[in-house]
Length: 168
Image (cartoon, rainbow, N blue to C red; front, top):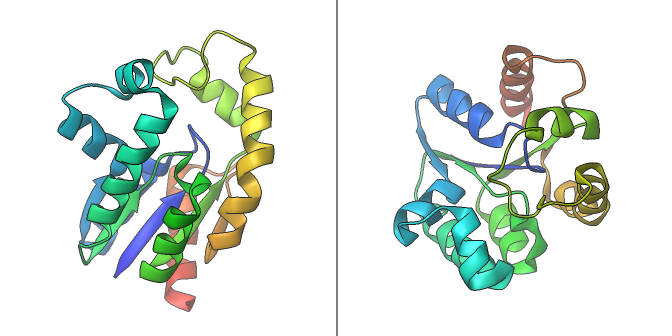
């Protein structure tokens, strides 16, 4: 079993991915954490030094390596879906869960977060809306399961994921 979790920044991919892996009693991999571990630096630094292009190359490699493992939940970076190679890999190698997240929830969760290079110094809401417009169709394209977060807590979301996985 291999499950990929996709969605925008601050959608809870890592938090819910860990909980799902624990519940299923399988491994958990966060591709962003894998990138940081291998680089010996955080993502903000990688973006600053190598640019987004350098980061995306590292992301492809981390996703490829993660997908070679079995019995794993893999949390991806919000922009992993931008590369068609990544989308093909995820949809052919496992089940893809899309955590669809309201913009207001993303804003609330990123309010004081300085670790997200794409948010930078500008208008966060404008950036989040632009990213959603660009990426939402790609998330939907590869998703086996879409979870509408809206007013749900993590426990309810986890239950919904488990219910939908059992039906697939």
